[in-house]
Amino acid sequence: MGSGHYFWAIFYFASLCSASLANNAKINFREKEKKVLDQILGAGKYDARIRPSGINGTDGPAVVRVNIFVRSISKIDDVTMEYSVQLTFREQWTDERLKFDDIQGRLKYLTLTEANRVWMPDLFFSNEKEGHFHNIIMPNVYIRIFPNGSVLYSIRISLTLACPMNLKLYPLDRQICSLRMASYGWTTNDLVFLWKEGDPVQVVKNLHLPRFTLEKFLTDYCNSKTNTGEYSCLKVDLLFKREFSYYLIQIYIPCCMLVIVSWVSFWLDQGAVPARVSLGVTTLLTMATQTSGINASLPPVSYTKAIDVWTGVCLTFVFGALLEFALVNYASRSDMHKENMKKKRRDLEQASLDAASDLLDTDSNATFAMASQFQRGGGQQKPLVRHPGDPLALEKRLQCEVHMQAPKRPNCCKTWLSKFPTRQCSRSKRIDVISRITFPLVFALFNLVYWSTYLFREEEDETF
Image 1: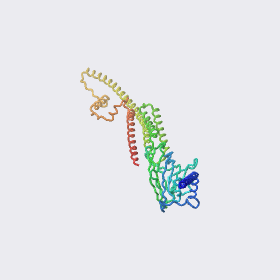
Image 2 (image 1 turned 135 degrees about the horizontal axis):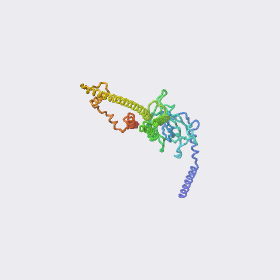
Image 3 (image 1 turned 30 degrees about the vertical axis):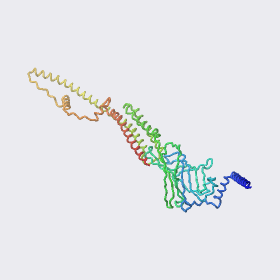
Image 4 (image 1 turned 30 degrees about the horizontal axis):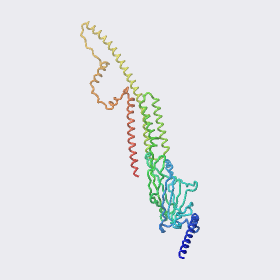
């Protein structure tokens, strides 16, 4: 009898267990979610206009933790000083009014797509110029409500943000672009924003920018005080380094080539006027076009940029090469004029010497005849005396003065210039020879000073 009762008890317990399992298997948890949502968000049960209470149900400010995921950075515009970024923005806070029964852990969270059903922080991006949500195919937004009343809000947005830039070291510069988030209406007495602990900012691994590299980012707080109160603010600073290889290929190397091409005129003959003028004018116009193209892609700032120094000096060298030819041409014409004057002077001296020699021959013949007659008459011969204005006497005196002058001290510059092979000792040739050496040396010295100055200043700015 006892064994029979024991058997029926086991059978009854097994039947109850099987019935319970069958009932659980038939439970529709989506239906349970609806009932829970109606229970916590029903009419007259939840007011989205009232902010949540503080930590542990106190009357303190509601704490909202923020983290962002940077999906892409499409452009960084130097002219308008702005950058475009696409990110996933997340906020998390606790609202004890939204607590619910998780049915023994089977309801992990509830999902909403309508943000107006619950209270939302009034966060805005203070340095935003433009922005939009993504609605393809459905709005990229969700709200998750956890059993303990914790709320997670996530949305994908695209923003165009202002980024004030300092272009003094352009294109060897680094720029800091900020993303600022603040409360618009709730003061710190009611709402406080905090960065999520651990890893508040994530960046996609394969982030590629056309002319920049994202070196690092820093998170910080930027609370602002106004006459209406103090407002909570978060910011993240993105440090971008400009890629120099693009500017080296597109700007610096072409400018160097133009400057070197302008030096070719120093090796052309000074008589090749059309070739030297056309070369100088062509390089000058090309350099001016290059400079105007560079300035067109930059904002009109009041200070001098590093690229302005480079293009200005290169333009000066090209213009100097053109002026050098003008100086050579002037010196050549001056040398020709001096040669013509010397030739005329030699011709006059030769003519005067010929006339003097003819007169001397005539006087000598007459003197010889008079002397012969005097000797025949038995008289005494008188010595011949030259007058002070006699040309031969003047020539002899000048030769004596030249031989009696003290030797001049050697000039170092003239001695150095005399070593260069020139067909004639003309000033025009020596100007070309000096320019062949001076222009490259000065340009090399400028490069040394330029790169050492701006590269060292760039390293100092790395202490950000």
